[in-house]
Amino acid sequence: MKIYWHIAKATWQEYLSYRLNFFLEVIGGIFTMLIAIAVWYAVFDGDGAKAIGTFTLAQMVTYLLIAGVISTIMFLTAQGDDINNDINRGTISALIIKPINVPFFWLTRDFVRKFFTLILGVAELSMIIFLFRDYFILPGSILNLTLFCLAIILAAILHFLLFAILSVIAFWFEETWGWRFIMRIVMEVAAGAIIPLSLFPGFWRTIFEILPFQYFIYFPMQIYFGKIDIGGIFTGFVSILAWLLILSCLFFILWKRGVRRYVGYGG
Image: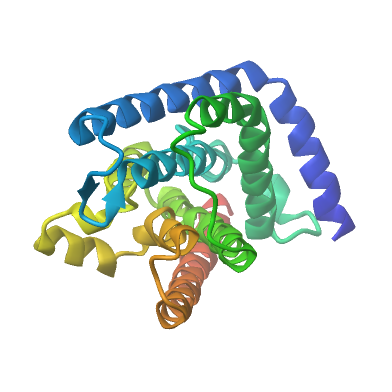
């Protein structure tokens, strides 16, 4: 683990060199969040007693604020670039011969990037939460908050696997950016980043609930608000773990075949 700790520190130093880029991306996410809040405030007509679906104005503002934080951490512009670039530029050759697990190397860098983005956005997001403090709702209990955080950590791993799968196909295709861009757009909608999934029409809600994207925002927020019972929480975590297992297997199958192809082609 010392190796990956050093990788994490080196990655942190690397991202410090590009902190302005990350900061601007955080600012862009904040503006998107504020626009979404303004739209929903108009929909509610500023009426705090009004409810749309199962959401009051305060719940919707809280939902959008926290969803904005999660989106800032996860839904980055450059997702999977490290993997795609390492394969296409041939730098993966140096990684393969090192005494490290290459996928875990990528996972370490991905988590450092998520944490770095979170740190940059803390001050700005705190200011926004302060401005909307009259509408911000705290979690119902410490247990809800703990399960919410656990769900976010698992979602971060799930997020990495989805983009790792799309990136590792660079062994067969020259560029994977388009596929990853489409995934990012679909993910924001299907995760409930803009509109809670419960407010979608029945057909689309069913589709989105089948996909794993709900576990990035909608499912954790249901836990946060206490809108889901312990049975639903258990079922949700089982589903997340099942998706993690399925995607991990798929990724490692593609990884192993891709490395064999890469080594064979290089030889």
